[in-house]
Length: 227
Ligand SMILES: Cc1cc2nc3c(=O)[nH]c(=O)nc-3n(C[C@H](O)[C@H](O)[C@H](O)COP(=O)(O)O)c2cc1C
Image 1: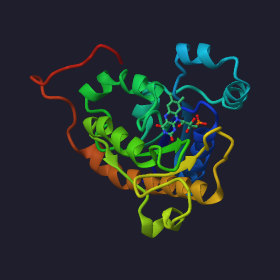
Image 2: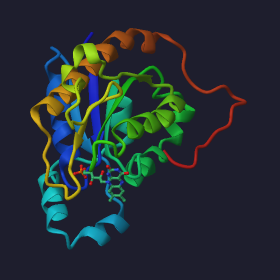
Image 3: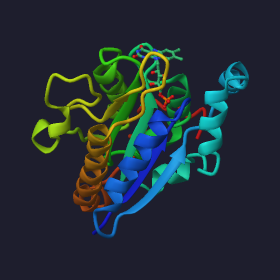
């Protein structure tokens, strides 16, 4: 039974956008997989602060046609691959803000047993390639998602001493201190590999997920402010 794969991403300057398209390509390579690429909404404060920056405006224009992610997209998906640039070794505020709207889905167990993975972009090789993915995993585990990484055996692109993005935890690219470096082929290939792996794992989990009883116990805490 093929899977539905959702790729919600946030990108300021376009690097994570390019990686998202590669993840989508990989997911689509698994026959029968349905794929949706969706933008995580920009924060008004960020838009106001950066709207005078040419690189920001160009990157936002290039992704303007991509619909924003909705809660129904998350319900539709069997696998969800999140993209976020690093901010101090963590996910962006934009992604965290979006996750914070998901209390209603969490409360009903609607994300449980869905396959998930994370890809990122940093300015520097040591700037958060690994920590951004590992720290993003924390809320995804609260949701009950099943984490999928990019192991060395399947991803020779992450093996070696060269300054490249990507790790066993997930794909990454390195934007460079001034943002001018673009994703290279070996980084994009790791992104494609995560897309196909999540598609396969999500398809395998689908019968399990649909059979198991889900939902919160009546006496459990409910953070139902939104969603
Ligand atoms: C507030 C802020 C914090 C950042 N923190 C880090 C960091 O901890 N490590 C790092 O390597 N890059 C850091 N960066 C650089 C971004 O990760 C970089 O611009 C991004 O990876 C580019 O991806 P994008 O083109 O998809 O936006 C930071 C950028 C901003 C604006």
